Amino acid sequence: MAAPKYTGKIEWPTKIELGRGLEGAITNETKIGYVDGEKGWLVYRGYNIFDLAEHSSFEETSYLLLFGKLPKDDELSDFKKKLVGYRKVPEVVIDVLKSIPKEVHPMSALRTGVSVLGCFDRKAEEITPKNDTEIGIKLISQMATIAGAIGRIRKGEPPIEPDPELDHSANFLYMMNGEKPDDFSAKVMDVSLILHADHGMNASTFTCMVVNSSLTDLYSSVCAGICSLKGPLHGGANERALAFLLKLKDEENAVRYVKDCVSQKKKIMGFGHRVYKAYDPRAKVLGQYSQKVTEMKGMGHLYKIAKKVEEEVIAAYGEKGIFPNVDFYSGTIYYAMGIDVLMFTPIFAVSRVSGWVARVLEYLPENRIFRPRAVYVGPLEERYIPIDKR
Ligand code: ACO
Image 1: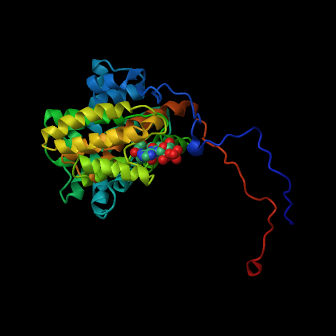
Image 2: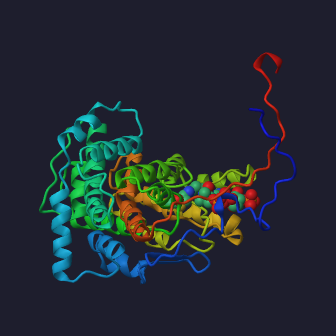
């Protein structure tokens, strides 16, 4: 059959404004979280992030994100029991993690671990809000176990069993470091997990939602979220931010580093945000903890250098709305706590899985597959040329 001729100009239905990186695009309505980038506000289900960071726990915040209300005493205790009950992962997951080459990035190992986990859940393919809620709770619990095991394996140490007596954050630290954390370290990790749990339609959350909108299983959607979070423009910025801070020996060095970046128009990791044009509230909380933790661990100079970098970047770019983001101070905290730098982004994932699951579950009852269009600007009238005539 002869191919019909496609001729004429492509007509797009309306005037199209191209927001690069989908800037300004709206995906859906949500009651889960709100970011006001101009005011520097972050809200989960109506509660402001400063309030939650000070008073809540990661378990309670996860419940809030998932079920839309702060739990009553018995509800929280049931939810915690469920999380504890799910902590242990099938041995095959640990075996696969052990077989991964040591030099592989822990986010790739985490992605693999979650993928294997899904293969051993017989109900993975039952896509209903009820079943996906249960899988979501399992994932919140088990991603900490998998990340903890990855942390141990990277150090050449055997993974350890979860401790049912410890809260989520304390157990996560224990599984990663092999030592029961002191109360302050557990609190710092808990605050960090609360702060990272949800953040609007960021790249990894959007990725999870797009993938899940095809009604695939939740393990696949969360794997996709992990892949997206790994990148240096998203969750991966925390390890890069610390890497450059560690190279700066003093505050003078910090001033020079920022000046060089500015003159070379080089992006400074841990700064800037698509939505925030004011100071990221999460960085405000983490900055305070960074000062406390680094001083406690005899690394106060690291905080001073970071603070100097912040001052210099704000002096250079503050008018443009570039301030520290969540990834700037988190690395200094984890580093002072003795955590392997490459584990920083997995820690982020251990927290953000709550937001991923909450948003996927919110969308599921009225699911519609995501299907945007791209504006085609290529030709129409090319004709096939046999290979020997090209
Ligand atoms: N340092 C210096 N300049 C910056 C920075 C930065 N960190 N971030 C943005 N800018 C500048 C850009 O050079 C650009 O300037 P121009 O308009 O003169 O060309 C302008 O600000 C806008 O930058 P974009 O990259 O277009 O902003 P976008 O909204 O696409 O990106 C992003 C946001 C990816 C976070 C960006 O600020 C960035 O790359 N930051 C560094 C990486 C980082 O810290 N990522 C973590 C973000 S938080 C999170 O994901 C958890």
